[in-house]
Image 1 (cartoon, one colour):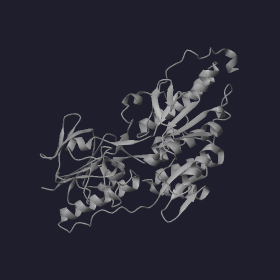
Image 2: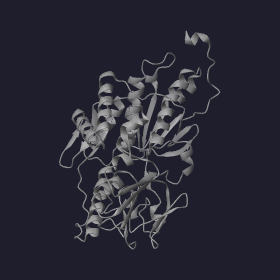
Image 3: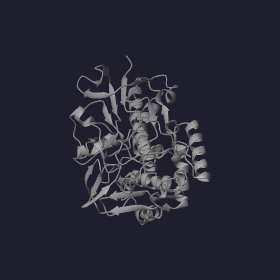
Image 4: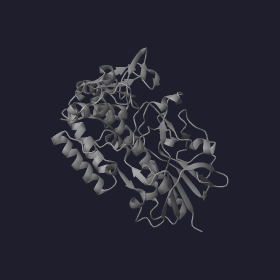
Amino acid sequence: MRPRIVIVGAGFGGMAAVKALKRADADVTLIDRTNHHLFQPLLYQVATAALSPADIATASRVLLRRHANATVVMADVVSVDAEARYVRLADGRTINYDFLVLATGAAYSFFGHGEWANHAKVLKSLEDALSIRETLLAAFERAEQCNDPDEVRRLLTFVVVGGGPTGVELAGTIAELARTTLARDFRHIDPASARIILCEAGNHILGAFPGDLPDYAARALRSLGVEVRLGEAVSLVDAEGIVLADERIAAETVLWCAGTQARPAADWLEAEAARNGAIKVAADCSVPGRPGVFAIGDVASFDGGSGKPLPGLAPVAKQQGRYVGRLLAARIAGRAPPPPFRYRDLGTMAVIGRSRAVADFGSFQLKGFLAWLAWSMVHLMLLVDFRSRMMVYVNWSWAWFTYGRGARLLTGRGELPQRSQATEISSKDFG
């Protein structure tokens, strides 16, 4: 009987593991709660109407069409029995395995304030991105129909919590959306008057970047009109906005990008976990005391020899997935396993806005237009298929020359509560 390999999660790590097992003499089952592989680094561009969902997501079955040994299952895994060697799905079914690879990723953490999730939006899935897009665009539409200046200010205040790459990219893109793309589209409001606030509890945004790159990023954001608030922690998020330090900020939209927590795979295995819930793994990405079980990507805490775990980045997940796939293929074929996993750091990038970005390649750093150009080329090449590369390139080119965005439709996904301050509209408003 051929070995059964179950991989949970169709993200960068899970998909890399499946592809590395293409020629293995094994039956590979990929389980994910969605039917697609998502290029998460560009998810913020879907949220800000720059790209459509199909530009950055491809059906998993399409990507694995030529992998004769791979089966795709769209389901939600709820537990793992490491002794009996099976995973349990939400509908009660079980799938047996000889080897299990957990690549379930991470979710945002509200630092013990789970109730804040009712009032702040996160960005981890296509559903999240579309919900944010609806909220952003609907805020301008509602402000256009409002005759209360205070309510208009509240509607056009957008707060981004967290100064990491996602928060910086969101804040910069929202500012460009308001000040360029939407600038001439409304009659009763000035979209350029929108207030965009980026909150970071630390002393710098992009704190993982070296040298003067964080300061450059802060200056670039401020030049776009973003308020960068440093050293001030959020103490409350509610339906009316946030409390930042001791200041109440009335805002319709709060976007949370301030920290992650691994999904509950460690609980499934009753394995040792790091502070963020990630499973502590061995040098070959295996889970100690759980034979045949591996964890990769954001759900794994891997000490690369520096005394601190590897960051939750797409390249880490891809390299670990490829490594575990090759290790399992070698084990099944009776070959010697590869040496312990070693992460190859190819650099870190963050885009700030049109023609501005920062990039750290270890031995040298880039900022400004050159960094933005490098960021664009790298992300185009990392997209998983030719169609996605072509569509993203066309959309980016269109946005570059026209300042336009092609995905600005409201489809009713993100229903916003109606406020009593909405103005009565007369026929002259349409004349």
